[in-house]
Image (cartoon, rainbow, N blue to C red; front, top):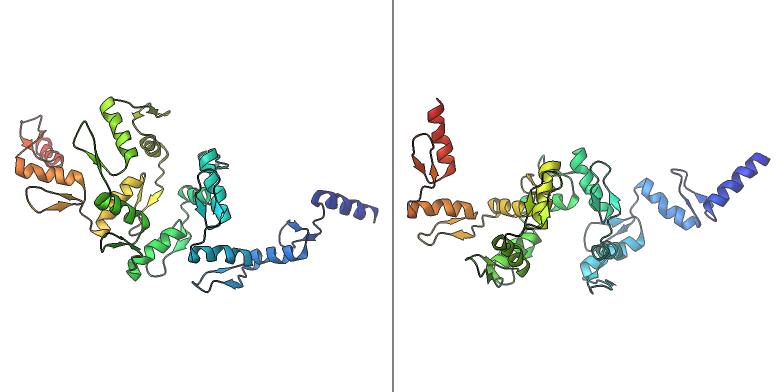
Amino acid sequence: MATSNAEYLEKHIRTGNKTHQCNQCDKSFSQNSHLLSHLKTHTGEKPYQCSECDMSFAHCHSLKTHINTHTGEKPFQCSQCGKTFAQHHHLIGHIRTHTGEKPYVCIQCGKCYSQNSHLISHMRTHTGEKPYPCLQCDKAFTQNSNLIRHMRIHTGEKPYNCNQCDKSFTQKSILEYHQRTYHGEKTQCSHCDKVFSANRDLKKHLRTHMGQKPFQCNICGNVFTKKSSLTQHHRIHSGERPYQCNECGKAFSGNNHLLSHMRIHIGEKLYQCNQCEKAFSWNNHLTSHMRLHTGEKPYLCSQCGKAFSQSSYLIRHLRTHTK
C-alpha cells in the first residue's frame, strides 16, 4: 500500500492538480469537463454542426471560431501591421512572419516552417501520402484545400468573380493573377520594354540590368537576382515540388510555373501577336510564332549550316546527321 501511495504521490506531483486521466492516452486534465471534451478526439464525435455549411466540430468554441469565416468577422488583430484574422491560431502563425520564428522542423530535410500544418503538409512530399481522395475520380491529394479546388472541375463551380469584367475563376490566386495582368496598373522598366504590375517585381527585374546577383546557392554556387529564384533553385537539389495543380495533379517547384501551367486548364491566352490575331498562353510560344512573320532562324546546325526558327526543329534535324 505504501508503494501504491508513493506512486500516486509521484504522479500527483508530476501532473499537478490534473487528476482526471484519459484511459486512451497518457493525457490528464484538471477538470472532468476538459477530459470529456478531450475524449471526443478518440471517438471522432463532432456534435457541433455549422448551420451555413456541412462542417461539424468536436468543440463549441471551434464552431464559434469557424462561423467567423461565414460572417466575415475578423476579431484577432496583429499589433505589428494591423492585419486581422478570423481565427486566433491564424494570427499566431502570421505574427511569425514578423518575428521570423519557424519552430516546426522537418526531420527528413531540416526545412523549417512557421506553422505545424505547413510542416505536416510538407512531410507528405517525403512519404508520398495523399490522404484526401476525390470521390468522383481516382485522383488523391496531399492537402484538403487541393481536393476542394479539384472538386470544382466536377461541379463547374467558379466562386471567384472579377469585379472589373465578367470572368470567374476556380481559384483566388488565378483571379488575383488575372486582375494584376488585365486590370492592374503597369510600370515600364526604364532600361527595356518590359512592364510590371507590381513595383517589387520591377525592383527585382532592375537587378538584371545592374548585374546584381546577391543570392548564392550553398550547394552548387549558382547565383540569382531574387531570393525566390534561389529558393526555387534549391528544389532542384531536394527534388521538392510543393505546388500541385488541382486540375490534373501535376506538381511544380515554383508557384510561377504552376500559374503558367494553369492557363492550359482555364484557356487563358495572355500573349497576342501584333501581326495577326493569334494568341498564346506563354510568352515563349509567342516569341517562336513571331519568327513566322520576321523570318528569323536563330538556331544553326553546326554540321551543315542549316538554320531553324525553333530549337526543337534543330534537335530533330540533328538526328539526320547521326543516322
